[in-house]
Amino acid sequence: MHISNTDPSTENFITVNSSDKMTVLFGPNRPDLLRHEVLGQIFIRTALQYPNKVALLWQNEKITYYQLYQQAMEMAIILYRTRHVGPGSIVGIRLSRSAQLHVTILAVLFTGACYAPFDADAPDERVIAVLADIEATLLLVDSQTSMNHSLVVDIETLKKHTISDHIHLSLNIDPKSIAYIICTSGSTGKPKAIAITHSNICHFIRADNEIMKITKDDIVYQGFSAAFDGFFVETFAAYLVGATLAIPSKSDLLNTDRIHVFLIDHAVTVLSTVPTLLLLINNDPALRLRLINVGGESCPQAVVDRWWKEDRRIINQYGPSETTVAATTSLLYPGEQISIGAPLPNYVCCLLDEETGQPTTASTGELCIRGPGMALGYFRNNSLTKQKFTEYGYRTGDRVTFDQGRIYFHKRIDSQVKIRGFRIELTEIEEELLKLHGDVQSAAVAFLNGQLVAFILGQLNETTMRTELGKRLPRYMIPNRLIHVKGAIPRMASGKIDRKALSALFVDESKKMSTHETRIDIGELIERDFVQRRPRRSLRQERIIILSLS
Image (tube, rainbow, N blue to C red; front, side, top):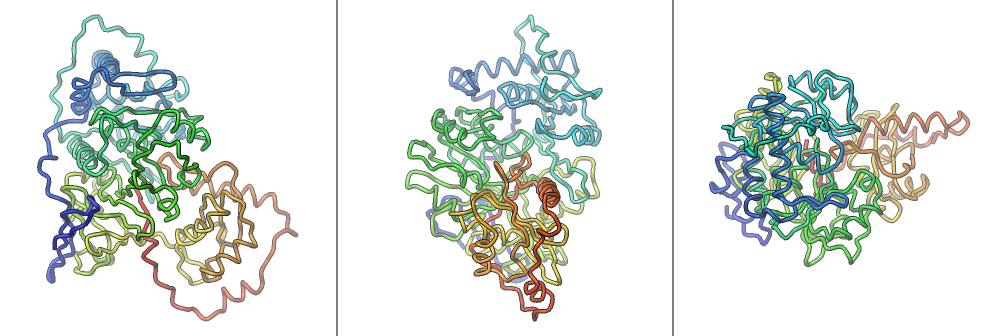
């Protein structure tokens, strides 16, 4: 069925509901986006086309595309000559936010090696474990991120080498080779290393910009950590067309008022971010944002209502890292049901039965994604790769519904918690808290020590919380504790809520409470333990708003 819609993310999408096979959504057929190229080539073409265009705005520096190319190529030659970095090498990068980070990433790509990015604040133990797991060649660091390890090479040491002859590396790099390895949290506690090829990421950048429509005249905010694949939505989307990247410092990122000022001072036109950040920033008329791209977590309707304008688009992107950054996209409008949209060009989404993993003709099931963005798999983990990368595509573990060419997210299939016989989705409680946006700027809920604990940034008090949530949720879904967070809800490099940090906050708050301060609602306990178990209400369609990129 042809889907006619003013939203370009669903234009020309076909829905196939086969009575004997499976339920499928196809992205637009765009063979012109499938090219024999590598990531470094995308940048080089732009640098040749717009050599004097500003590529990076970093503090008081303006670095042109030619200057960035020159610096990156010089470092690539140094890496190639002095460290024998080339095709087949795996280079860890753990650098502070700076222009040098961007130079280094390009340099490694120019050598034909693949890189593994680490957040500057990642624990040393985690970095060491990943380096061993992926058998890295070396780890590039700076003075702020250095650590004691045999693979460590300080970037300043490399820069001391000089290149006497102005030569360029001319290496045969296979588009099917690995461009980068990105790590996400694993259910076993051990990070999963995902291998993304040049073909994967180059196609994504081109396909995604069919929706984003970034141009050389845009100024793109670069806020994501290099260890999060949202980094590519910002960085290489800009490199593709010759746009300018505006890079805030770490101190800017830690203060929402400073982010607000940065966006205005740098005349930023394109912002990619997690939705909750938008609840903390003032929607100032002085902002020049024409495009807001949200991803990485749930997008409350309040974000759309607050930020949408006639001359500003808000795009919702969804996709696990295993399918290269994002696989579906949707334009968001005030008052409209939020969906994760439809597949990007050349992607295919289908539904599997949650129990059997086999194709289903139902409209609801486990989302499975295939196409040119599907990763090679988990690096040196064949058993997990075979489990998740099937003949039908990558099994996301997400329950969704296909409805008239759009995909609506329900929940993680395995993300429930169970309290006294009741299965509870923590995200449902979080979303209800965020609806109290007059008193709640940001919220997270965790199940700790046998009780539900709400963490909020805002003025909400416990009495109001219980009263207001009691209007919308069963009593067994109302948090036992309310903890006010100073500054911001703790988040990981990906922008997702840091559950471990919430646990630490809970422990700290518990130590402050004396025994006589602990209140027990006897009536609530009786209701939770002995009330007749009512069937849990169905999930409302307006709740379909998560965007997990990992």
